[in-house]
Picture 1: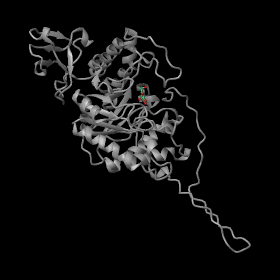
Picture 2: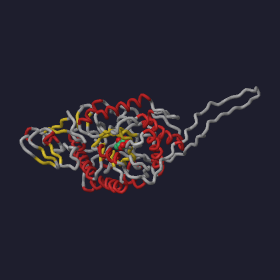
Picture 3: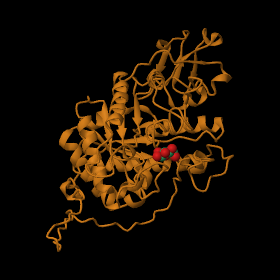
Picture 4: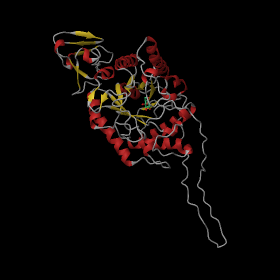
Length: 443
Ligand code: GLC
């Protein structure tokens, strides 16, 4: 069972560890000595100074290009950020990699719970088998020409949250330095990957990270990432679960190769109805999307757009989505509305998520959930016979007399991104069939 998203912040007294180990040698009547085993010296977080902040220069052309290349993406959620892979029902199989690529997604965001696969004491070594597993997945995704956003997700103690079953507690005084030293290892391991790999420091900082603690820790972590990856684009998001409303408090380090992320799950009573990890569980039966709901969905996007214009950093909406307990027609409308709202504000996105409770793909049937996919994917469509001899318009698409993709014209601002879906939804009403056998053109 997944823990509550709305868990309250309970400030914790921070134990202070002695900076140096204790060694007692006591003489005794017999003239001998006793020694108490050494406790390894606690690493000093000040060995990882925060990068200077307060004058971020705005994004480099490299960061702008990376943000654009993220395009339309999808999260491989509930896979590697579960306490262990498979514990939440889905794994990163070759099938999901193949299908995500074939569906035409430009990028995959890969959430990873590094904290449950690393030592509890310095030097907090990441389990080599787990590191190799993550690297092999990243390599497979890159080989499919996908852009990959590799993050750190669900380091529960960092936010002051309760641990999931089976997780080992770390001494309170070590939690933050462990975060930085995990990044030191991850960044070193992935430093030779090409430009299509982007790193994201932390998913949805909240709780004890809210406010200045996150600004300082992010600047420390970026400092260690920059030692091995001087120019790789890095994603940083604001606190309160990557809320656009917290962008005003986000203090970016003075670094040009940054992309900023926000998450948008508005309207929460719709997107998270019945979600077991939200306390209290929200009632079912909420539909979408009224004018008031659309205003709720787009308000954070407007905040992000204004912030991006003022600060000159690109914004990536790393998560939006609606849980499967909402009705399907509403989810399709929600997905399409969000996609269009994000793109019309010049931002790129990743749908939450591919193959679990919010998923667009059924990993058992090995098939896309066609109506849902039509909202967020760029799947190739084949027109059925009744449409072959005619031309019709739907939104900004024109279909000619042929069922092949070549017949599809795109008047969207970014021609290489072909929004080949929703003709109209649900597919069953027009008999359009989804074919995923080969990828669309990608930017
Ligand atoms: C956040 C959480 C993830 C959850 C999603 C939707 O990304 O980290 O576990 O499924 O939001 O609630």
